[in-house]
Length: 217
Image (tube, rainbow, N blue to C red; front, side, top):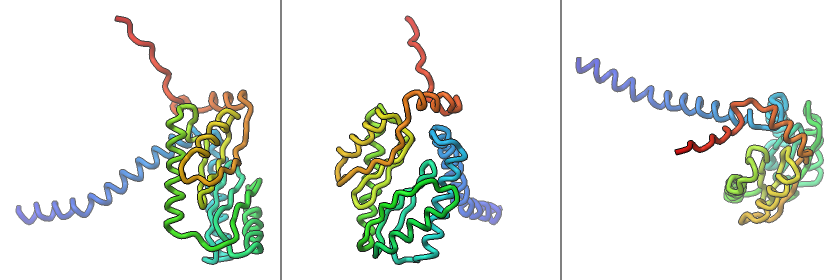
């Protein structure tokens, strides 16, 4: 009896981390699905953007290895290349490689010629990105899902499908966030009517619930 109990406890201890990992994956999947539904890009475009990013990364790494630090962000099939390379020649080469990836419709080559950034610098960039996105939420006038934020060496790049009002809000928020050296706008401005059309086409489950009238008393 005691042996059976000990065996059960050991199995439980071994399986618990695995179960926790599965639950985390399920939660991430659910959250990712909700964000995908709120995105103004079609599901097909979102899939293309993810494919473009990993293909660009793989092709560039195969060609130049660890000689440079490069990041690829695809939004609406247009790719932002950021990071550092040792020469103008390599910068141009990376741009050509990315432009040759299937489905790519445009390239923003923002690579800087210079030494590779440090781990601490990249950590600070990640922190800046988090602060900018958090402040988007705080404004109450902008859905953070609609603007992609990338920070490289203190320079904030903004991508998205937004109205002019949303773009102005995003730019103002980014510019007034601490440690931001510069804001580069790569957002695509849509007419208000088009934005409304995209919002109406979203699944009902992805839209914020309508507020219920207060009950009389």
